[in-house]
Structure formats: structure tokens, C-alpha cells
Image 1 (spheres, rainbow, N blue to C red):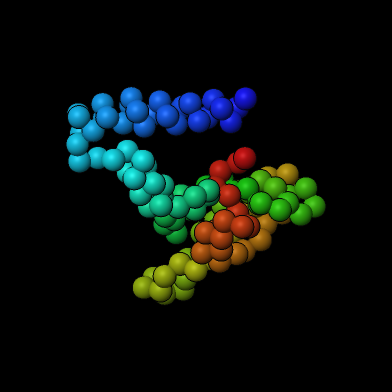
Image 2 (tube, rainbow, N blue to C red):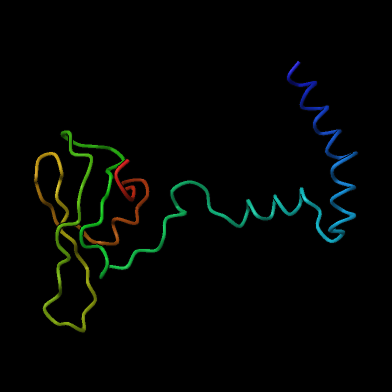
Length: 120
């Protein structure tokens, strides 16, 4: 029954909706436009905004695979290099539950298999 509904919806689209859309916007073929748009956008958490190490302080992070009940973290300190001309390489994150801290490379936060932005 659901298959029949899907076929009816597809027929309705191709026979009724698409001709109307093509009259209004003859250049756009909707199915092709949607397919192109979906291909151009990455899927899942990779849509995360680019990170700036100078703005990481007090940002919230969620471990994808929590260890010892440590799931939510806060970037408590951005570790500045000794020479100011050297780029920032590390950030200290603090577990919200246990207050344990660890120093990680800030670029490690861009690994979507390990970290999620925000508290989920």
C-alpha cells in the first residue's frame, strides 16, 4: 500500500508539479537541482563551522565515545606558545563531571569521530 502511495506521489509530481515549476522557472529542473545541492553539502557533523584556536576558550565539547563517565568537556585554557609568532597548538579541556583536565592538540577537536561541538 505504501509503495502504491509512493508511486502515486511520484506520478503526481512528474505530471502536475514539475510542469508548473518549469513554466515558472524553465531553467531549473527541480530533481536535478536538489541532487546537486545534496552532493555539494557534506553530510552529518562535518557541517561544523571552522574552528579558530583563538576563540576556543570556554567552548563546549562532547566526546563521541565517553570514557569513565567523562562525556562533556569545556575548553578551560588555550595554551599559548612561548614565541607569539608561533601558532597555537594545544588546548586544555576539563571534564565537567570529574573536573579532570587533559591537554590535547586543538586540531584534534576537528576529528568528528572523537568530538562533537556543544553538549549533546
